[in-house]
Length: 158
Image 1 (tube, helix red, strand yellow):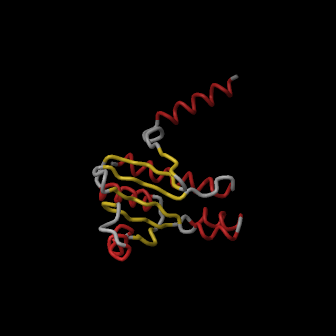
Image 2 (cartoon, rainbow, N blue to C red):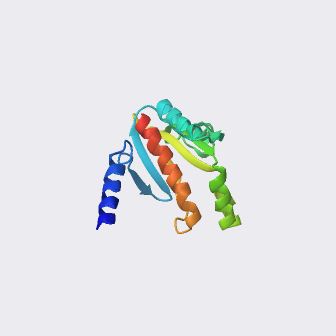
Image 3 (cartoon, rainbow, N blue to C red):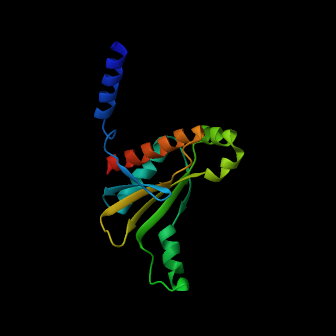
């Protein structure tokens, strides 16, 4: 009984921490999607700070919206659906080593990527999203936890 009380108390304390209950997501197709009311630059910079604050290096920034706008005329479109969109790629070495040791074909999940974007039809709302890995594999769980924590930290800073 005492252990149950301790677990309950610990759970209540965790929920009381800033950000622990705030960030909500939706599962949309292959993506886990969060949203926040802020401007794009603030959202992107908060995510960068969250990643770099944990000692990780952003290895590449994909300027997805710029590419889609540039190629829209080739496919008969006026513009992309995005106001602004970038994808930040980064890695956490210890998690990546565990990931590929569990299955060498998991290399396709490295580096991790989080998209930050706005939709032309919804100004003032910024989305964070990442591709959901196959959660049944235990090596993916700490990566999903990390991605969720980074986004929650970025949202909390907005």
